[in-house]
Length: 144
Image 1 (tube, rainbow, N blue to C red):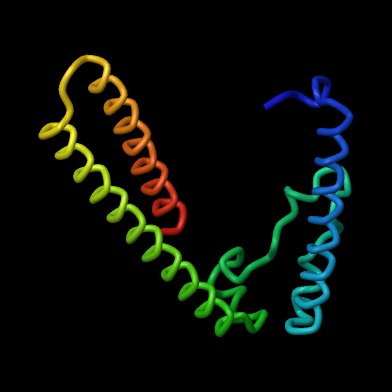
Image 2: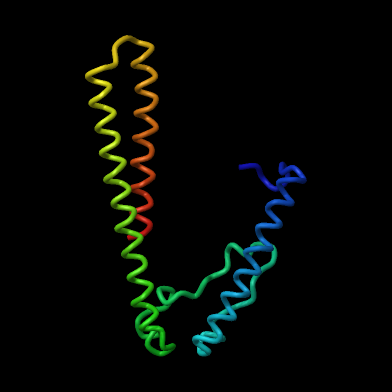
């Protein structure tokens, strides 16, 4: 990615619009949090307009078990856990699917691809499929 000094005016404008949108979404999120859990108010800070993407969301997983109980977030923590678990299962299913696709294409290459040119193309395609497997596994690790 280009550094801030190398950004074109169009890129700078796009980044600023995205940051403004994130800031507005965070303001809405904080209002929802204030209504649903007023005890969170002291923990929610001001959003930095320069880099709103670094703001903490203050999800139940942000707090330890004792604080979740004190703030009344235990039921929300259970819901958050279920969502994370579902995301992990989805990511795992995606990895399984990518492994099947890779293996099927590898078998096809072994059985049907001959010659240097065809093998080079097939190997390039298999390399992309292997990278897809790795990225899927990384998504699973993050969701876990």
